[in-house]
Amino acid sequence: MVSNGSSQYPAPVGGASLLLTFKGPRNTILIIGGDVLAASRAFAALEAGMQVIILARGLVCDELRWRADQQQVNLTDWDMLPSVSTSLLPSAPEESLSAFLAENPSISLICITIHTVDTPALARICHAHNIPVNVTDHPALCDFSFASTHRFADPSTGGQSALQVGVTTNGEGCRLAGRVRREIVSMLPKDIAGAVRQVGKLRRLAKNADDEVGECEEGEDSSVTTPNRPVPGWRSSTTESKDESSRRRMKWVAQVSEYWAITRLASMSEDDMKLILSGDSPQTTSPCSVQVPNESSLHNLTLLPPPKKGRILLVGSGPGHPSLLTIATHNALTKHADLVLSDKLVPAAVLALIPETVEVRIARKFPGNAEGAQSEMMDAAVEAARRGLTVVRLKQGDPVVYGRAGEEVLFFRAHGFEPLVVPGVSSALAAPIFAGIPVTQRGVAESVVVCTGVGRQGKEVKLPGYERSRTVLILMGVARIAQVVDAMIRNDSDSREGLQNSERRREGRPYPRNTPIAIIERGSMPDQRVVASTLGDICEALDIAGEQRPPGMMVVGWAVLALQGAGDTSVLEEGEERDEERIRKWLGGCRWVMREGIDQGWADV
Image (cartoon, rainbow, N blue to C red; front, side):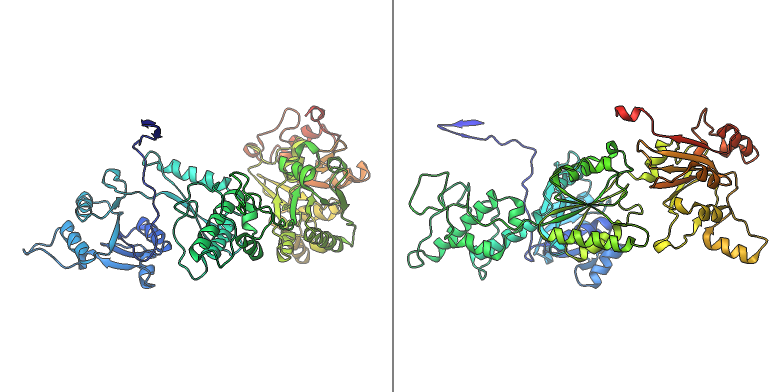
């Protein structure tokens, strides 16, 4: 700061840029180059309403040719420019450019994207004509630079909004500028574009729809440096001139823009706008100025708040153990939910986290009523959201991994609600870990496939064929494990009818009967049970285990034994010759093994 008598003024510090915005057909930009970057610069100029001239030599990218065909840009071939040389030799590029600029005085900006030995000379010609120029990768030749910009989409209209943000590091870090821009965009409210749209409408109403909207952005009035100044009160139309009325209204627009929440601005109705500009609202005394009769301010303008809009969250509850809930799911259940619509397989330990003040409904799904229960849940969610409630549709595992979330998203969207889908830890990946099974393992399993054992409305599904290096995870279907195993191991090559039957249920080679399989029931819960055997013996093992414990899943492949005991990670190296020995070692000479419960360490976690 420097002192000037009794006042202090900031001392200018170099290294910054004068940030301006250019728009409108009165500005013409000349882009010298025909590459993709030139096309990008042309598009940005077109969005600003500018006239665009492309001066290129040789190859021109497809986008620029298309825009020229659409008469969006004026494409000029450099080699077709008239020669200004008096000799038999062709004109130098800078001479041709100088003549072109003299013939086109409307050009106000120039952008050079080509890289040739003539580039510095071309920039000097631009400087000689007093036209600001940007030269790609030559900051010393540039009079201006392009900021890293983002234009916000308006969700309400589906198009682009008037709001843009731009970031510049003044040549210190172009890639970093892009990252800063992304960070800024991600932190702004999602309805920021709607707020700009509604404030624009309010501003046009304040200035009268027939008047040309000015370009003053900050404070809405160049003479107003702060919106805290008192706003003159309402006068009768016989004592207030049109200019005075317009200025008063614009000051009100400035105060609304400054003090109202973004969400409230975005939801302004026409009635709200008329009330703001009428001056008839109660509590319009300025709280930050000396009291003058009838002075008005919108700092605390009393308007009825917009009705609370309901919302729907499609939330995954994870495999079952409460500690595997994501923070987002935990917050949805404990802080935001007014109503929880839960699938019946969500364990009680998760439901116990929901406050007692929140209503919880459990889906009434039973064999033969799955579709009816699904429709009942979706209808209930829409009905509650229409009443302004926050509805949490709670699903086991991850909502989009065989959780029917997709059809619910489309249903809710069709009824006016865009649901927020909150991922959950999928039981397909988590439950095997609780059973000590890695779904992929170097030397054992190089890929993994997730599929269902039950088709829509109970129909059979086609299972993947056998690949030694692959783990197959089958969700649901434990209740019909006999059919699943039969489809996997059946080899009906001797029977044409049998071959066709197996091909309908399996895509690829049959599985060897000694392929390891594990049935994991109630994965991650204290009463988890794992029954492990081979495809040839698993059905009998499950019968011996007794009553099933849904939900259950199957893990098929050599990864089942990879980490058991001393471990076995040489399956792919050694081939099939040692498979029988490998199975005997894994099962300890038995035909199957069973394990109850989960690691005690989870009690501490």
